[in-house]
Image (cartoon, rainbow, N blue to C red; front, side, top):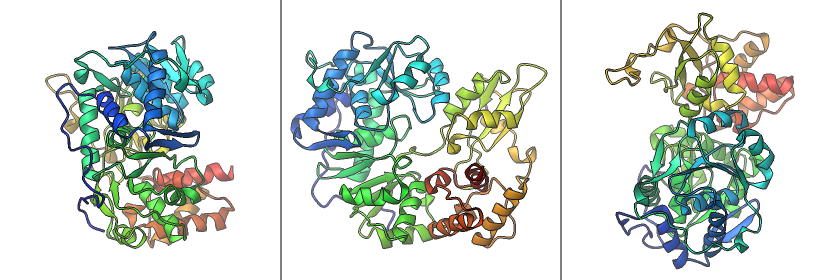
Length: 485
């Protein structure tokens, strides 16, 4: 396993045609669909579409959206991780609107995102329609119909001629990415992986995560096939076998998900014949033992730089939620630069009243709405946030959190016993709740050993994906406490 880019053995990638100044993801997709119409475009839990079928389905859905939203508008997507979400993204862009990705797995966080992004329409699928309607609070809701492929698309739904500079994707804090930016990111991603129509790639990142757009469009703009895979819904023991069964040739994932695949391969799961693996953060995010494991379990695969995102922390969502809390006036959630690998987040807040904000209460509030990896490790209350002369947050003047925060020592008998198991497996004398497993000397084999020790001690099975989403001692103690409750 080397940290080099690989060339595809089957020929040149199809993304080598530079985009025209007015080109958009929709225009490039239509050209790809016309060229590779009968090839598989996407398949997932609910079915599969060729490129010709995906183009028709998204045209029909765009025709249904167009009376309620068009150029300059925003359409929120509340869809599960399935092929309907892929069609919905394309359909929104075909109307000239921008899509606001929402995450059904974090329903309590989405009303705050809706308030921050101000969409004109909420698009959902049948499985999530009821939850979407509850969160919409008067916003029109349109459900993706199962027969959209048979609808009247009324011809191509291109946006205005200046669409390349128009917004395509709206982030949780209201910032936007243009069609030109989305296209450039997708082609750069496809170029790093040398994607061709012969490739099959799992679509791991949900459309609500910032790593999803390069994966989605990187494949669909080059004629490659997408396999919609949710690693946190499928049984963990089947994930690597799914990649092999669907003949994946390339893989783009986070270091944590790669560690899960290595754990499964160590346990004897069949491995796909990958030619390239792209890891968010690059090879520097992996230690020598993990690189050696990739050589053993994915022989012939090259390690290439991946796109940021996927399962990395999403500070924008935490900031939006903190600002919505009644005890918070201002909030900032940067990554702690002094933290070990894992990009721990730290929250800084100010309070509007004399009572002030309680850090533990705010952390409980965030954990009820966000996955563990997106919750700051600590909250620091400040009298005011430091600003630069232009009025923007001056992150360099934020105080170091460790000086003011507890040392993270275990507090309960259960936490102390779990800490003892942690230290035994990692051969360490002491540990604190914020300690990160892999930064503390752990590897994929020790993950299984630790969780087996926990099971022997408490008689409960801790989910490997749940632990790897934020592999700290604090995460493990909370998972154990929830399992034995």
